[in-house]
Length: 334
Image 1 (cartoon, rainbow, N blue to C red):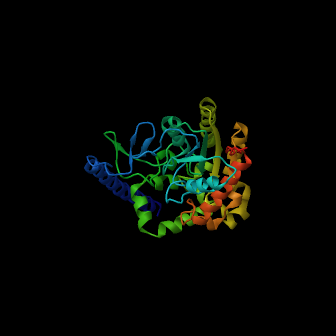
Image 2 (tube, rainbow, N blue to C red):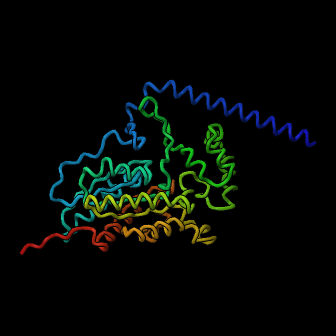
């Protein structure tokens, strides 16, 4: 009986290895076939410091009299014309007590806090900002998040949505590590509902963000050291280049789940508590949007804000900027 079970297990492992090898070979062949085309028509291009950057950088003229604000972030601040930054811009510039301000949205989908720091140094500082805002997503606690492939100094079109090995290995559970790295299992997950049920069973021992390659690091104490280092460097850049700095953190929609909060609300809200403590230590004005949003403020991915969420967040950010005296007042005419 034991010998039969071992033989069956061994046969299963061999079969899995053969199938996985086939997927890996197919991917390698695909890389070779598309390498000459790469992403010539894509919105991103290779950058040796950032891995990728937008093909078109923000079009900004010379610094004028308007108070210049540069916003750093990822897809949370990109998107439609009524994106989060545009809404804050509109609210602030309608306020008759605030001097004219110019808002520059440098958000890049998929960027981490590390990439935003590099972007600031490379492309943001020449814009001569007087205020820099960081819109922090809880999947920012990585160096790089998207596993993009570079061939001959150009990017292949694949990679967004596929976690880097660093991110994949940060999740809880060895089974999750294997699933994240296996092309076959990722394909199987996308093609069947069985994998979804298995994930639900797996998560019943914890919280779904613990098993996500993008978000799990935000709940790991050791990972926040690099965020502290990055924000320390950003604050130093502010002093050297004469701009003020603030940070806004957008919650993950799953943090509003009533069953999670009932189980352990302190753990669910741990990332915001850590980040708030770090910003207080660095003297960086900090706004946590969690108390001002709810589960109805997100689209189906629980990451991006819907129209209601963007408006609520924008109003609170504008109020926060006034409370923290981060915006210049309009001079009264005598």
